[in-house]
Image (cartoon, each protein chain N blue to C red):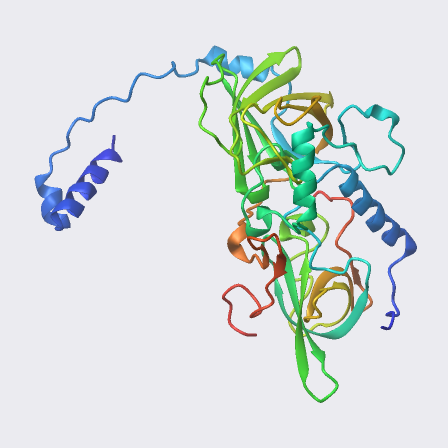
Length: 276
Length: 137
């Protein structure tokens, strides 16, 4: 409440244009209480979090520990490129057309975050936070955050379209199963593979040892994929790490234009720095 | 193009290559593509560090290279991010203005004075690589 009074006073001051006078004359008004939300977590709720698998901490994908399978299975030889998603005829034709346009890069070169599922495959760590009813993933790449609600709520029937969609999760034994729907049209299933309105992503997170996590991600999309597209990634825990700042616009010299042409900007050394 | 003298060990190079293959296999999506760079070519430049940008999404090393006519031309070399490199032994002082450096790069395809960092050798023989296993601080 202490913070509310100066805020109200500031609002009044801005409206009247005279800060000290407004401050004296504006009596603190009672604000309407926010719509009643869920009960605050109890000590028991916090104790229950302590019994969940120990996900809390900083994790980074370990290279070589993953790969995609879209029906190809484990038969792919060593060094083989992971089999990509299996596409409907329309989606395959679209991908061929896009590939034919020699699109050299995508919008991440301009610092637009990739969204789901690409944001989970970055060469940067992620921090998992477990609190009552919620798993929060703080993603270093592009400074992103995901919220997976584990409080029993249902997925929205008509979700707004988001880069990370809307996620709910449940614990199946030691596995966190997250389901996500409602993705921005600016995200892709894979390079040159746009998703449809019905894309759904199921992720299964579990510890295979105290410092190793696997995430099995299955994408279904009846308008684009003829079979579920599953990738599995392995992450290692780094107990002494913290998440670092990542402001993509700080000194981004890469770009892609409307025609898909990639560029590099070599003008002026340094981000708004004096010459040395 | 001349090969510089104090090459990194074969083991270090092997690690670098294996990491790049592993990154590709794991389906890692990076900030940008390699399209502007000639990833098949290697070019070696030698000069003096003008400035080292310890910035996201990429580090940039600006090097003054003698132009053969008594002057210098400034090259811009793109490296991995400070977040990535900082967990692999680099610091914001790994390169300092005034350092003499020989650098191997993947040159820009359009011939402008820039490229992607492969490795650098400092005057004292120390070699900087962009990859390796992450370390705990």
